[in-house]
Length: 138
Image (cartoon, rainbow, N blue to C red; front, side, top):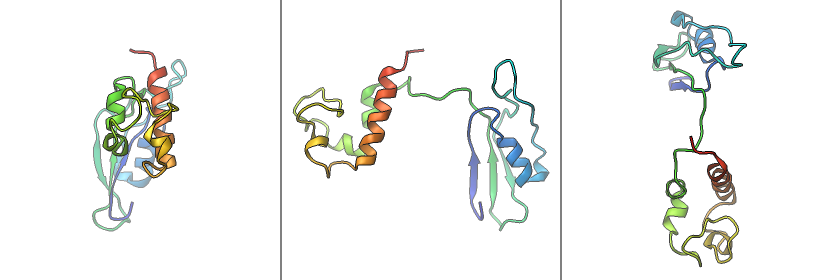
């Protein structure tokens, strides 16, 4: 937080505005209880606001933002997901099969060349791919 601009981002009702009020009491950001009927936040914050952080060095700023109800990848195509990974984008067309999904196909460059992408990045891609392809369209 010190000397930085920090953005609070998260689902509705997780306590972003409460944390803002703790760190920047002058904010007096409105808060409400969680909706028991919806088991979710009531979307009290409607706009992103900046607050100076008293007791911190100059330039220490906190941004309180509205929450969101859901987050997902349903709006992306597989091609867009792949394009978001520079390592995959750079090796496009180098796999044995043109329609390689980079999961477990034979001849996948990411299986045959372990230096092509780190294991953690490949695991992340595969997790996101599985989430994307199993998500029901909205």
